[in-house]
Figure: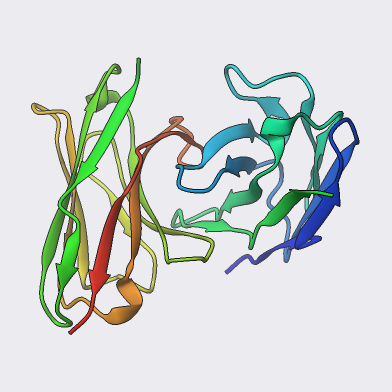
Length: 109
Length: 119
């Protein structure tokens, strides 16, 4: 089973600052990695898929990069609505089984 | 617009069964694989199960294999999760989600339904 490790667990930043979130896989997942945002009491929302493709309606300040085992989600300039928990997720080759990282909470400093 | 609405959650005793439903609209349900994902209170996300667009293939997390069954009714645009032999550790909010058609990406999510397993 592929394990996804996200770091840091918590990121304390101010609006307008740049956020850099890391996701490391225990073995290569090629580019089969997605990022989701979840706010309290809400369902997760897809931000990035295939490691770097923005989902429909996602602002350009969100970007994803990486391949293999190391991935990054970058929020170029934090808006008030971006303070949330972010999860990375991958799928094993076969049989398909999805796994999520433990999450990174981006909180207001 | 795409909508997914879960129902069927509630409080159930350990060892009992429960069936969740996910009513969908706004997209061609029969064309997409579908998933169930759960989230225990205060915890992260855990994938539960996947069903192919035509019901031919199903896949499960090891934690629910043999106890849970995912199914779908393409004529009624509805996804189901039959949960048997429930355990306290199955307590969670259960989300249904539409796949992007790559068996990897969860592109739309419902708001979730809470299942509490407790005596």
